[in-house]
Length: 169
Ligand code: ADP
Image (cartoon, rainbow, N blue to C red; front, side, top):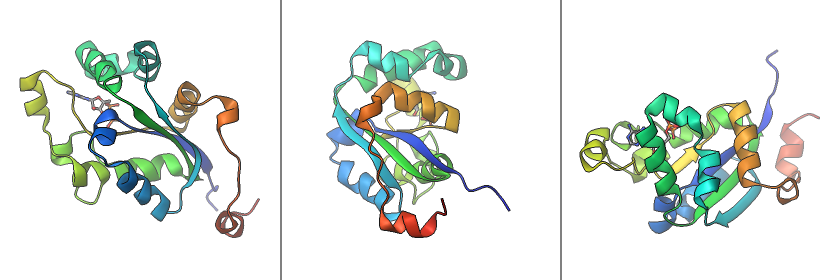
């Protein structure tokens, strides 16, 4: 039998999501699938904080200019930092978030339903892609990113009845 993976993941509702008043709608989607909130806060991030989130790894994958643009975008206004817990939560949340480019993100995903920008347009405008949300891409990235946004005592351990009934411990 495949091992049951109860894990935590880090989600950021980026400044464009807060600015557009989409926080409630997006949180609602995560609640609906039964993911549990372990941490939630509104943060106005400093540049040095954003640099810890968008690490050199992003520059290696997407280019230094993308990393610089994303650090600037993440500090444009407040972000919601959210730590979600559930079975295979990293994979589930990525599925719900959708592809990086809003134009090609599938309808039904958060990016596909609430954003539309193309890479072509952002390249022409020399701006980062406004795609509302960040979600950790692996369990190890989640662990590292949760530590960037939450201190140990800020995460809440609680077991809803629903979880007690569905997850053997
Ligand atoms: P994701 O957020 O889908 O995991 P990445 O980690 O590769 O994607 O990139 C981080 C963020 O950088 C993306 O969410 C997007 O906002 C922005 N971004 C990525 N690639 C580009 C690009 N080519 N042009 C502009 N912005 C980009």
